[in-house]
Image 1 (spheres, rainbow, N blue to C red):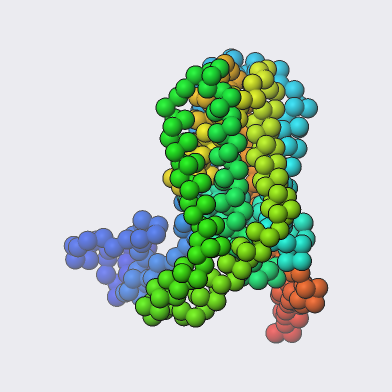
Image 2 (image 1 turned 135 degrees about the vertical axis):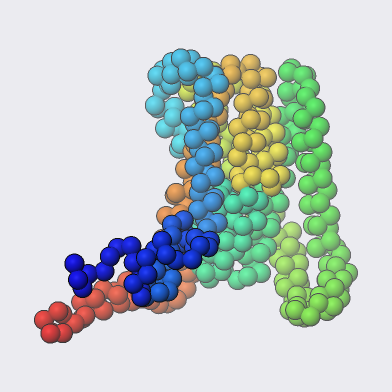
Amino acid sequence: MTGEARPDTVAGGALVEDLPPGPVLTDPLLDEPAPIVDGALEAPRRRRRWLPRPVLHIGRLLLIALVVEYLLVPNIAGTRKALHLMGSVSPLYLLLGVVLEVAAIVAYAALTRTVLGPDRSPGMGTMLRIQLTTLSVSHVVPGGSAAGSSLGYRLLRQAGVKRTDVGFALATQGLGSAVILNVLFWLALVVSIPVWGFSPLYVTAALAGVALFVFFTALVLLLTRGDQWLGGLIERVASRLSFVQADVVRDLFDQVAARVHELGTQRHMVLRAAAWALANWLLDAASLFVFVGAFGHWVNPDGLLVAYGLANVLAAIPLVPGGLGVVEATLTSALVGFGTTRAVALLGVLAYRFVNFWLPIPVGGLSYLSLQVDPGHTDPSVRLAHLRNVRSWVTGPVEAWRRRPRRDELL
């Protein structure tokens, strides 16, 4: 056995049991004793993370929410009842619901292109990919509307749209679409309350809508009739901040105010944008209507619009991404109040939310990857240069691997 090291010895021939007592040093990543090499502790090998820690946490939370929503929640309606309803559902109605949801997304992309203007907007295909990407982000990150708008701003700039046009379009479509939703909700309440009665939640949603409408009206008035006063105020505040250039901020404000004035003179464009916003909400509500009807109950249109408007107004509160849980609970309770059985309401809402909330997440991820390959720039020369850069990114590592020295050349 001479010349062979015993497994229980370390450098210098000392036995492990002869070492002085003390705390056991462990590898913090593997939770195992750190190996000793040549009398010194070997540096623990760190595990390489393929995804950042926040992305992993969000992914786990979304997976848990998906399991709870689609495996545990349907059991509340009764397993047998749920299985019976799912067995009798019509695939054609489910397909129609998906088509209506896709049409709603197309309508919202058309709204963005209308607000930007035909000469400033990228193509419809690019706008759809940007819209799906922002939807994906807003459904993953808490308070995701802000994160989605920020990413949408970057992608539109990448597509060649000027920053003032992007900021104006995103703000206009967001506020304008919210105003259209609240008007639709109020009209549905006027028709529904005499028939179905009153609920305290209606007051909360209606007050939130009134506050939004007042804010939108005040903002439009300030940008059209008080733009000089508001621009001067913003410039004075910006001049007190060391990290902001006051003249640049004032210039941006003047450009946005000029776009608002321009929008006010183009009534046909305003009407077209309002029509696309209304189409977006109505097509989305029609998708919910079909998904619930696919399980055997067709809701009255007024009751459906009240439930739909109430859920979306409450979902605007940035507590959870995309109103996850809030929309499901509100829609189910409201539809039950309008005469739908709990099992049908629950399964119809879950089917609708699968297409409305969950499906855009992977589709949006793929859309984002496609935008990195082809951002859809409005200038063909810039677009071609970007495609050449992407080609070099892809072919560069491949060529380097092909030109690597072979083993026989190294010998």
